[in-house]
Image 1 (spheres, rainbow, N blue to C red):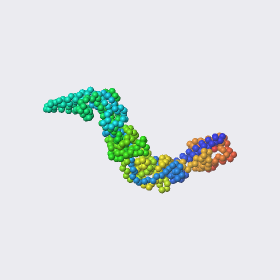
Image 2 (cartoon, rainbow, N blue to C red):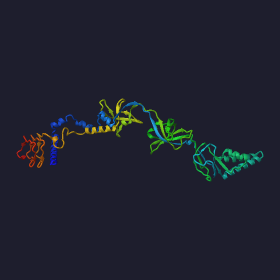
Image 3 (cartoon, helix red, strand yellow):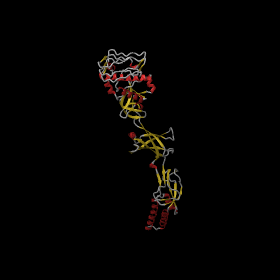
Image 4 (cartoon, helix red, strand yellow):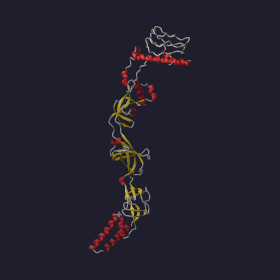
Amino acid sequence: MKNRKQIALSAALVVVAATVVGFQLQDGGAEADGGMEDHNHAAMGAAAGEQQPVRLSEEDGRRIGVTFATVEERGLERSVEALGTVAYDETSLATVNPRIEGWVETLYVDFTGAPVRAGQAMLAIYSPALVTAQEELVLAMGLLADAAPGRARDNAEALVESAQRRLEYWGIPREEIERVVATGQVSRTLTLRAPASGIVVEKNVVEGDRIMPGMTVYRIADLSTVWVEAEVFEKDLGLVAEGRPATVRFEAFPGQEFNARITYVHPTVSLESRTGRIRLELPNPEGLLKPGMYARIRLEAPALEVAPVVPRSAVLSTGTRSLVFVRSADGTLVPREVTPGRTVGRDVQILEGVRPGEQVVSSAGFLVDAESNLGALTAGMGMGMDGMDTGSGTGEGMEGADHSGHDMGADAAPMDHSGHDMGADTAPMDHSGHDMGADSTSMDHSGHDMGADTTSTDHSAHVMAPDTVAVR
């Protein structure tokens, strides 16, 4: 029974509330005007979509983690961070490649990575063409020794020079040629020697292999100086230039920095990674740095011009604009649009929007921004129900509601309360002054259980039209 009573009362209250709202919207009653006299709806509509200032108590700000930073005017020290790898100094690479055909008889350097010195024996090869050339040189030397002065001797000397020149063109060392001339002995094999000192980084033969003219048998790299090839983002390419110093760090040597210098900036940018390549030259006298090692490079650049600076966390970017929240003199957090400049580390330049000495929100700014957006949303909403107390749902909020002067039109829908149990504490409903139209449908209260303490409904002063059916 109690549930039925609450449902019936709620339905009645909804109907009455709808009637009151309709009257306020239609007639602009005095009570509605008085309740909203301080609200400018035109201003609220204009403010919709614009962020509103936020006012937080000190305790609320501390609870959500709001902190502040002072706008400073200074020049930011710029630096460029990049990753790179150690590579060979290409200008110091040397190769061992014979100019004659032959077979490898002996390998004196038989593994990759072996250190070699300039002039060190690398391998011995057998070549039939080389043996023939040495025999021709020995024969020419014999003719020269037996030739009489004059034209015959001149011809013999020309043959000797031709045989020596052929051996030189094949890359035979001068000392080997002089040995053949001095001893007259033909060597079956030829020893090829290292043209420079360094590390063997490539070996392409084993004993017994056939080699051809121009074939690279060994490749030797001098590691006393190494290169570091690094990738720099496109936005930082304007800060790098040849000759500028840099510091390089390696994971193999934590806490140790190596000084380097930019020797070349590549003229192209990668379409895939949007980066440009730079080259640094690094001394490596002890051989600590090995090709293939990863390197972290820090390049110093000229400082930026003096301008207001705030922490990067203070700037909230929406994609189309950037905002900061500035604390005013009374503690209000006011959103302000700014124009950010370059970002260096944790700081960012502000070209327009703030002045040195102002305080801005530096942390939890997204929470303040959410509160500001919520304020803008509620500011644009109409408050037509302002001042209306809907109560608790049991009829208490409408207690004593005065409907005097309401015109219940001819087409008003009937309100059938038959079978309702009007509790003992039901509040009175004063209908004094209501004009019940000629065609008003009767309100049948027959069968209602009016409790012992039920307050009577006062219909005094109601104008009952001639055709109005009496309420029983």
